[in-house]
Image 1 (cartoon, rainbow, N blue to C red):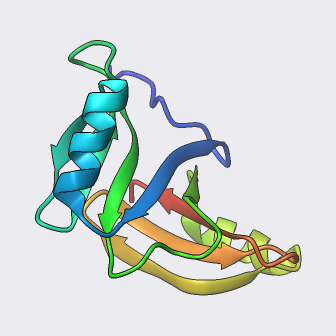
Image 2 (image 1 turned 180 degrees about the vertical axis):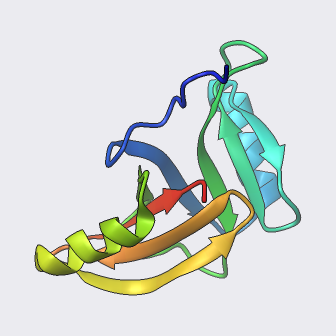
Length: 124
């Protein structure tokens, strides 16, 4: 029997920070807060809590030429990404990227009626 998923449908699940220098950002957050990282190549590092070796990943540092407007990207978890895409559209939001594949599954980005950009992801 498999363990239940720690992810909850449509709950805030992950925060992604855009950084202009991944090594400097990792050093800063490690020194300031004790954060630990899982490297996924030269442009991305997952953020893990300083509490325990088995701490789940709670966010990521994404390398880009400039910091995205609006601050960190909030990601929701979805058990049915296609249905979440439809729900966003039906509620008056606008899909601005995706759905697309990434190493952890699939995700898409959307804006709410005020223009805030968020994302949603699913393991499949």
